[in-house]
Length: 121
Image 1 (cartoon, rainbow, N blue to C red):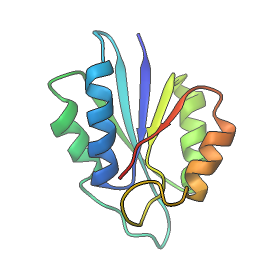
Image 2: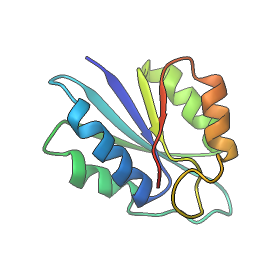
Image 3: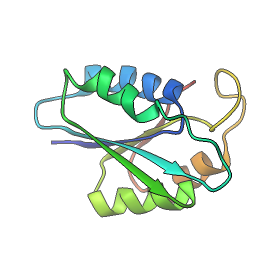
């Protein structure tokens, strides 16, 4: 059994992460989808529901919403749930691809000991 975390702030990231995950999933795998509400930053309310639509036929999806600093919340969640792999986008806002890596993604890459997969938006 593998535990995956999709850390997302946008529907586009959730969609890309779901497309990455679907061929990898085996029976018994667990998928958590986490959004972190940051004060003063507008949330994409469809980010969690997109995961349910894309992944519901493949596995059980547990959606979680937290508030606070996104990097700190993601790292804490990984440790709390003993996550095997994190999937997230390169940054919250901005265009296509990997033009720059945002501070949240950079922090997660530096602090999480297991695999971190960054999907293009």
